[in-house]
Amino acid sequence: MKKAAAADRTHTFRGSLDTVSREKISGWAFDSATPKAQVAIVVSANDQMIWRGVAGQLRPDLAMAGIGDGFHAFTLDIAGKLRDDVGYQIDVTRESDGRPLDNSPAMLEPGAAEPAGLEGCLDTLTRTRLSGWAVDGDNHVGLVVTANGHVIANILANRYRADLKDAGYGDGRHAFDVILPELSALIEHEIHVRRQADGAELPGSPLILAAAGAFDDNAQATFATLLAGIDSDSNEAKASAFLAKQMDLLLARRADRESGRAAREARNLHRRRWGMLAKDDPVAASLSAPSARALVIDDKVPAAGRDAGSVAILSHMRALKALGYNVAFVAARAMEDSAGAAQLEDAEGVACYGAPFYASVEDVLNRQSGSFSVVYLHRLSNAGDYAALVRTHQPKARIIYSVADLHHLRVARQSQVQQRSELAAFSRHLAFREFVAARFADAVITHSPVEAKMLAEKVQPAKVHVVPW
Image (cartoon, rainbow, N blue to C red):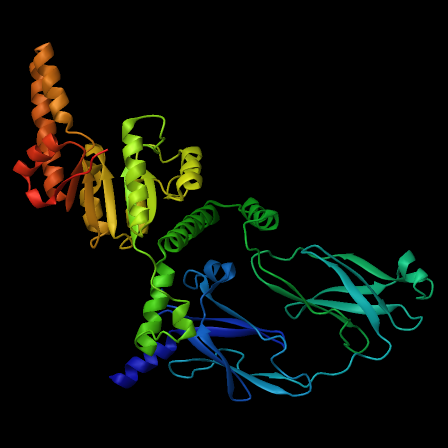
């Protein structure tokens, strides 16, 4: 049974060593048996370990290919760490069982001197254009351009540049400026420019075009072109399902980052693999325990000059921060108030969660499940609507119900003054809801000693607290 289990685990492992040079080693590793975990790998040169870590960097092309959430890549900067005059066998293996990635091992031959007679430079490289110059005596040099090993252009360096003539390079006709077939913004491209005659590398080659770190114009143009070509209902359905899935992945990734889930999982993984976190462990030092988090929920984004409730909740958020919590806020009935959220973040250093990344309070509680230590519910409207959801999605969080005031008392007085029986019935309904919410919470806070006394008669007195202005 153990052998069968091991075979199954091996079958689920995938990975590739994509780039090997004296400057960089990169690739990816993924185990579908544990899709949310990041694979620990070891990189060796001539059987000597030069790096140990996890394949946890984002590559959008992996996510688009259905390889987990895309956070399964690695890039190792080794510039200056390998001797130019020594050949190396580069091995990249899974740490747990030594299984190599596809294309591993790879060989790095000893470096060679610059080809005699070839001079030049790569001046400009974008996803659509390449320019520079190449000189070999008085000859016009033929060049071959490759992207990730595929030929994308053949060039004759014969364009005129006055600066080359002024520098003494013959008649100055040794430049090139070529339009490239548009390169995808979704993946990294390694661009080589070599002399056609013997494959000698042009000085400055290779260059790296990094994958888009943001959804820039190139990435948008790529997607727009692809979507514009959809020509059938079935393809439209596939595209819609794909985009919906990618949107969910993007929102989940953002929630993981905001909640610090990745940092906590990395810390737990390190502890499981290496035992307790030692003080002198440099990796452990970078994986220190994240601060406890508190989520505050109110109807609107508080504004100090607007109402007394805003003043109270702002002071309570400052108190939570003073106690060491990372404080976040959700405006339950104004999720789209981005201007108010930005102002609160700037003024108070409080993270705000709303549109377009979260559609509701439940969305926040669900996507950031298990990440809050305290959830503060201001007013009955929020305590009544969300306390049960907090218990579901944040089972370890302590719930604080901030009463603001016992609203049923206002309505009861109004019913007496106006002699309205329907208000008296509504007051009893509100009283029932307020006391149920108080019983459900772990702690209840109020500004009024009178209301605190009333609450203590209905719930455990020990969890009712007066927080004066």
